[in-house]
Image (cartoon, rainbow, N blue to C red; front, side, top):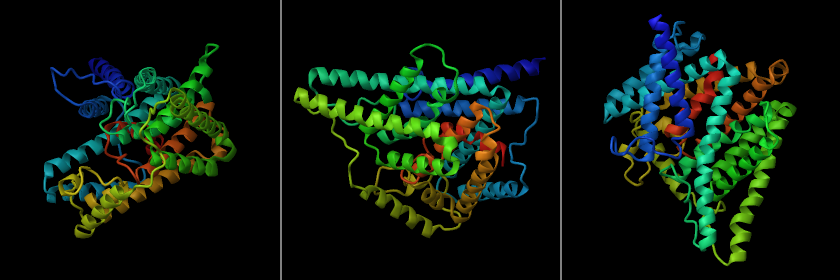
Length: 414
């Protein structure tokens, strides 16, 4: 009896921490500064580590034993080889402890995906509703801070310093990662929830439009390009089945852009002031080229085992960036070519399993929730995979645990 109660209590606490991490941590530092002086980024990382620790405890106390590895033997051997390469690379790195910590976090995220998949299968409808509403709470807090700042700037005719008043992230591109992970998921209530209340639909549509306004204000070319790639690939794969989702995306991005022009062009023009100092129409990519060139140089000097997991920052003396803003180049530089090829092979096989399990024919027999969820998650994975080629999606705590939400179906079907 004690074991069952312990397992249930841990599951409840873990799920609560997950919801807090999703809903509150992107905007608020919930760790008391007097207890642990931290930045918002550090606070998010500490909560992520706490969540991973609880997930591992849940896995230990779970009555039904799960190995954690996919059933496919070839994938198992590939993972064993990947672990061996990662540990060897860490041992040979400048700071082995730093590298091993990175491997531990990534391993913990793997078990987080298993935990989420298990929770989904226990009660899929309620689980998805709780997660979706938690995401809505998070973006509502971000929008509240932003639009209070906008109204204040409009009244007092002061510029909105780009990217302020967006809060919660050390860098605006980290916020863009958070936006890209949520753009598809927050449409789920409109697609498959039984919404009650006369104005609920309208409020959700308005929220989505104004969420897009923040994206245009933050001036991220990479997010828009990744979004376009995700839309095109999702449309090509799921065709008519994806149209309800794609129609919402097209409607909201159009209304969001028009609203952005009104809020930051028309209204400031009428009041004789300038509110925004950033724009999505830029042609500077020299910083990325410099980081990518350095990654290639590091890979060429350490082609087999790399310089060590999460060690790019130790070798980067020409920029303040701790990562090369490209997931493949980062893996090649830090893990080496063999490990990178294994990672790419597993990812491609995972997508293959996804499409084998969730294709146009199979979705016809799925529930409305499962059908829309599969399409939404596929879009979210594709967009963030594309964005990871120009930004540090794989290194930020918010992106890492949101990726766990999206990989759960894949892991259960590999």
